[in-house]
Length: 371
Image 1 (cartoon, rainbow, N blue to C red):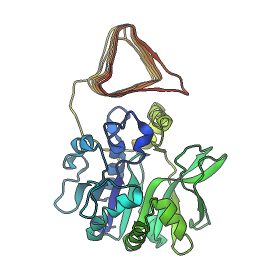
Image 2: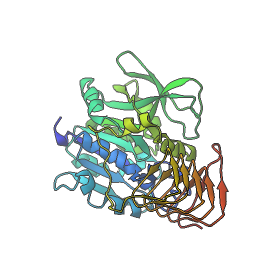
Image 3: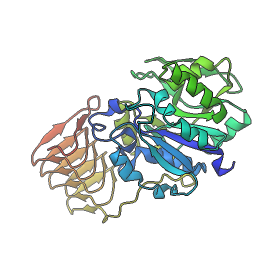
Image 4: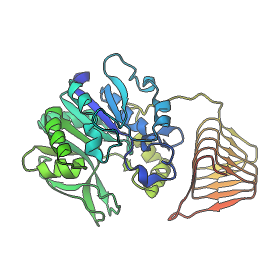
């Protein structure tokens, strides 16, 4: 497949409202993940590993940190004269307001889609964590001469207010019907926000849906056209998670403590790229105790850390205990403090002797720069 045969579009603000307070000052796509990454890294890495080098990022609000992270795209080899990466803000000549819904957001990129000179367009939610083999999915899409191909996971016992698209399909992989339940028991094929469109199919469908005031790509474009379009499904059998709730974000991070899942995400043949920040190695004190945890560079650990993920520059002082927690860049845990089941945003200071104790069912989230 030639490089410019496919273009990619990322929705940077997918489900922002579900991850407050973490998304109060940043877009979903720029949310830190796994000790050293941002969510956008997984989408961009999936694109470049499939030789997709013409990428547009649809942004709505709070995208300064995303701009700082992406810069000119050099960390993903997307600093190019032809194609490359571009951020597309929410305003255009016809509208001076932020978009409402996926269809209006995508219609704001209609000129990008028209000019991208590609056969296919991959739409990618910026809230997806996983190492997605887009090359194989595109091969399947082309072999079937599909109009639309939906990537899916088999999900057990789903419950979420978002209402993901579930569907059944025939032996060839063609989708027969679709539903949008907010809960189900058992197992169902469920879309996780990565969809391939023929560009020639996407443009008229998008224009029509926009003119009719529709909002949802899966509900208002895909589900409504199953009978008249060739819509196929291809399964992603590895790890994939959608950050559509606090619980989902916490569990996806903590899943990295599992060797099998970590090895499934960080595949040598399809690396996950990110912006590199040089720092000194993490230092562990003589009396520190550490088990089943991940550490970024620049941490100083003099206390106890168990089943946790620490981002760059976190300090755990003497006598402090951190368990089952995610601490972002610059967090300090004071002497003899205890932190359990906490997701802390950047630059938070937990004072000496302070206890912040959540539970597995009720994880505590703290705001950035809070003390």
